[in-house]
Image (cartoon, rainbow, N blue to C red; front, side, top):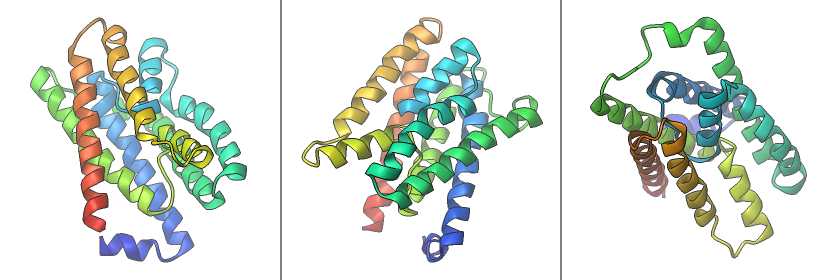
Length: 211
């Protein structure tokens, strides 16, 4: 954690750290999520299912969804937050698109499980790593975009509202939709729930540990 604090001391290092977290975040999707056919949490879970159904890349979808929201966030929310989240979004999308060009999916580094136990491990690993990367991005004053930005809008407009219920609702929609998207199977629903649980527990543990 001391390294993270040092990185956050200068503006350049802060943005470099956010960019590195975004690249790592994208690689987790390429290595664990996409090969094992399940949707993670939040809006990224929705765009992952769109990619599965229509082969429209998550890298493009993430930009289409996040750029308009961040343009509004620039004027409505904190500008530093908007710019740091924009940095994460641009690098995350770029890393996904570049990895496709490089053929990462066909390389030997991806974790493509052949049984339920292996896919369960993939969901746990993805939730663990992305929970860590999410919490580090927040510590840098930004976010991973998507649901987090929507939550910030809600909190800004109605500070008395708890955005946790909004996040829970989106995650529930993703989990239920997984059944219909992934060939009417229960396994993707369970994998989504496992990812969400591990992701939230990991980020919560880091935030509470920091306090």
